[in-house]
Length: 544
Image (cartoon, rainbow, N blue to C red; front, side, top):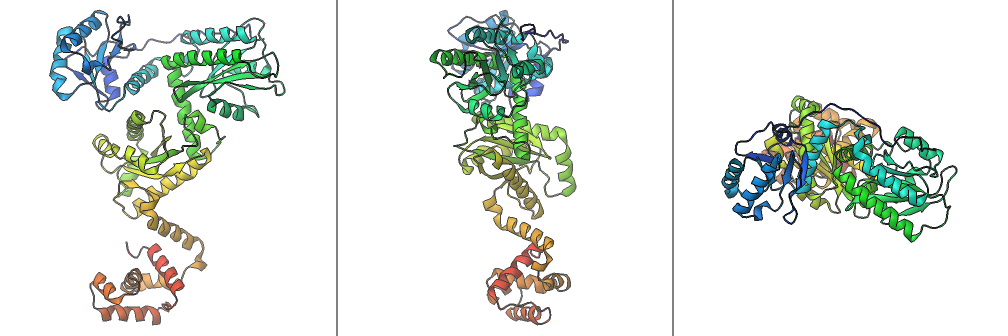
């Protein structure tokens, strides 16, 4: 039915050059720096990893990534730089110690090729991804995965369809169909036809459960016919443990069990698709947006279907840490509002958090929401997540401003738990601002008493019958007595310690307590009543 649908849609786009100087400006000095003088106007077309056992690939305009650069002798490095310059590479990228900077600068000057020093904390795959993202953002529209760059995936789909005899679709994590088969006579159903025409998998009562199970499974699965949907064989497309998408093949032979040959064929196709999807800048960039959208869904709690953890490459059994990041300025309300509403500052905060955490947790996903940044990554212990994030604070102080805070509400094991934990993170930020907490890392354990006071204040305000009306009157009319009563409660009725805390005579404490009891009618005999009074005094902010 879809034989007449052309597998490629020609797209003509203007060529927008990405220069070396522009790329370095986008990456920032925390990722890479240029050593020595160089032509920063030269165009960058891509990246290529250096392999000492292979000949230098013919990739003019690419940045040659040299992970083994620090192990090369100076003569070998000079020879490599000269060869790269002759092959018209855009630059050489490697890591080095401070003492080797002068040598590399000299190599750049003598060979004529720019040398980029990659920051030691930036992993090579992360650095490659950052460059790819910048190139993709400059060169491709949202639907650029439909152009001829996706032809290998269309060919792969056709090859698999020849074996199965049914239509094959390759999807990204956004459930968009990025390639499909067009073999004459292939079996196809209305559901697949609609997906191809819309370039997106249509809604189905079975789709969410099937997708969640398929992404989690290590082996290909087969789903039986359901209504007009023909039987399907599906395999997850992964790069290591990180999901990239799925490949679906209609099986017109019926609902029989999946065969060993089918498993072998579809697994092989998934592996080939993974390689192409990683190398294709358009698909890689398209995969970033669905991941951010998944996290946005999770933190808002709207439209959660339960498959989000699997799609993000996070095992539910291990759990995930949700961290919140708030820009500085919490002590000043106007300054804090300005910081939260500044999109550029917030975007820089998100980018910095993403780059730092991705070095250690490649599956991390971050999103800016409501003036704060939230990060989700696989982790089974809250203290481990905090240790991972704490080194970010001095970096953020240098890049943004002092005072950026981290909220660590806890570990989540299910998708539906993320939104409540995000609410806890927000409450931690708000409580810290209200009580002028100076800690940079906020957890429920550290702020538990203040959280109780905050919630108690809300409870007392919502249900007036729970309050002692005499307490509010006492705070307004005779604050020294209110402060003495609170200090006395905090010292568990010890008059001597209360007097020392307040800097008054013990008899002054006794006199004020009598005034609270006799003049203001506050009962001090019953322990439960005292506990309620203590909590109300604390919630009224007497000790602020």
